[in-house]
Image 1 (spheres, one colour):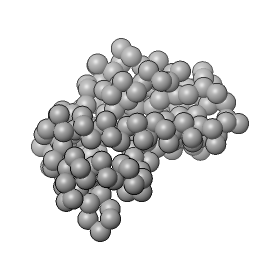
Image 2: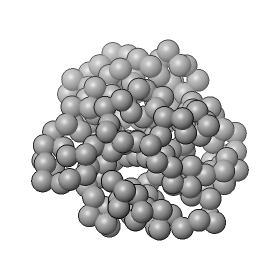
Image 3: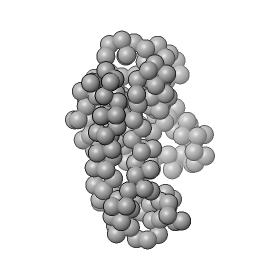
Amino acid sequence: MLKVGLTGGIGSGKSTVAQLLEVLGVPVYYADDRAKQIMNTQIEVVAQIKQLLGEEAYQNKVVNRTFVAQMVFNDKVLLQKLNQIVHPAVKNDFEQWCRFNSNSKIVVQEAAILFENGGFKKFDKMILVTAPVETRINRVMLRDNVSKEKVMERMNNQWTDEQKIELADKIIVNDDKQSVIEQTIELIKEL
């Protein structure tokens, strides 16, 4: 089984590429979605997050994402500690998911910070989705109904495309000029 990492900065379109891969029959593990579920359901993870961030990290037995984001996005040490709780749990969940999908020749994990957290090392191939910075900012502002400043805060917690390109095996350009569908189909052929 070929394990492929799919990543890209916020607003790059990595989820669009992931959905195209699924349509083409490739199983996709959405790491950020699974992380949210794990943060709400795995008792050990919930306890560790409460110990790190306090009881306010949960509201009605569900992670209080606004509170958690406010706590960690401007505190890199706290963010790293939170990641040290969540990332191992997601890694174990992904391995179980791979066993469940063991009949597939290719499996893909879609995640935002595979390069930043070193997670890319566990994959056979890495796909990077890129888009111009202004395009990404506009997409996120529309999608999340947030200010440019808020988008920039999130972007500042991620590597630039230039930093990621050096480590990527394949790049899909999502600049609204080139066909992402054609690039994704070509990618599957190459894999």
